[in-house]
Structure formats: structure tokens, C-alpha cells
Length: 161
Image 1 (cartoon, rainbow, N blue to C red):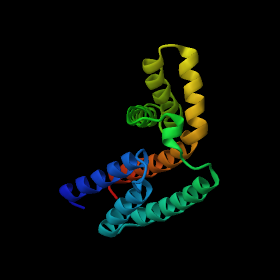
Image 2: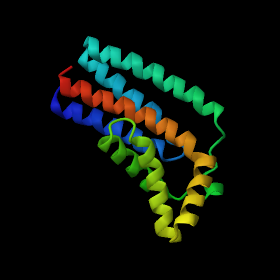
Image 3: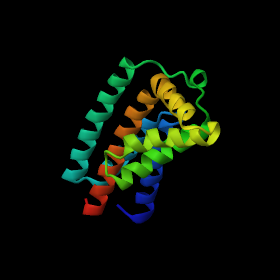
């Protein structure tokens, strides 16, 4: 796959990861569509294996999400700023501590946002717990799966698939 087209695939994957944090945007499906586009152009065993594994993972995540409570963002006090902090924390954590760092990074991003807003540790931590009960688990499961898929794609591209 040529450079410009690879860059466009990366942009679709990035939009998908960001779309997970925005209600109503099909972030998971954008990640899958970007991976499908790459696999159709790449046509290697690694590309097809990654597509099959990602498809299975993302379908399992959809089933898990249906089992979790529905998202009630406004009721939990989730703002766009908090979503941005949580997403940035998850991505940073994913990079600093590969794969597993997304979870503490996500929670840490919410905590940082609430600590800046509320000022004290106790109030910020109480808010983090409330947000995670209402919406955090659902968003975290979906974001983690998408980050896994994108991380695997980056690894495959780096390996020269």
C-alpha cells in the first residue's frame, strides 16, 4: 500500500478511536472499516488474519456492551472536556504501558479533569466512581478494543505486511 493511502487508513482509524468517545458516532465500525480497507489493498496473510481477529474482537465487544448499562452521559455529569481528558489519558497510557496502560490512563484522565474542576481529592474520586458506574465501563471496553486493533495494525504496518 502506498504512503498517501496508508495515511488515509490511519486517519480513518484515528477518527474511529475518537468516535468511541462521542455518543452517536460509530467509532468501532469506523475502526473496522479502516482495517477492512487496508486488508483489501494489502492482500497478505497477516492483513487477513488481523482483519479476522479484529472482526471477532469487535463483535464480542458489541455483545459485551449490550450487557452493560446504557450510557447516560448528561446524567452522570460527563462533559466534552472530560471525554477529551479520558481519551487522551487512555491513548497515553496505551503508549506508555503497552495495551494494559489504557485502563489506568482512562480513569486517570477522568480523575485529572475532575480534580481540576472540583479541587479536592475526595470530591474528584467520588466523581470518578460515579462516572465509571454510569458510562465509564461501556466506553472503556469499546475504547480498549479499538486501541488493541489499531495497535495491532500499527505493528503489522511496521512489520511490512
